[in-house]
Length: 200
Image (cartoon, rainbow, N blue to C red; front, side, top):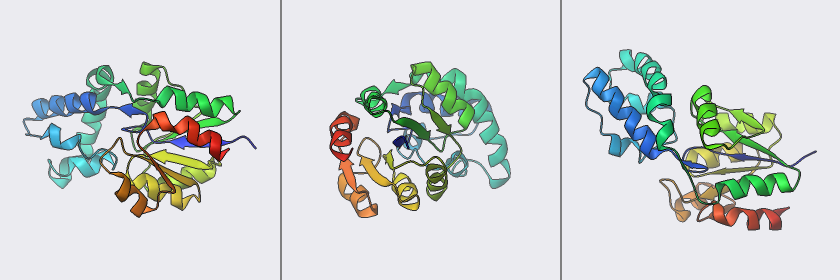
């Protein structure tokens, strides 16, 4: 069976902070509700609705999620940045005959648009999943490794009995990722191809 490696999206493969900030600013302007978009982009990872609940009453969160997702392609895609080592990491998996799975909490149609926008095409894409839910997706697709920046990503990898690889490009440092159960912690994805070669 081919090696399957899963990657988180936001702050693992892509720096989506500039675009997400712009999308939240657009939502704020459209709804007349103040949102601290600088704070929002420091805590990417959990479901959208969780973040929106900080700014909108519970009864409006579902509506605001729909509006945000509609704004996302226009405002968020142009700000997308590829993190160092991301393309090389995907290439390293493929060079070993492996499959690349992107398992993300992002709304799946927008995740696909974002990956298409920067020209990074996974073999498998699963969106709208978080923490232990990512574990279900990883198990379904037979992923042996999952790479992510968030404690929720480590929980997902552990739930799937996959090797949990943490990267410190998101909100957590090496000690926090290790304490959460990461099997290995890398500074960023520039270190991943060499780690994969040793692992394989």
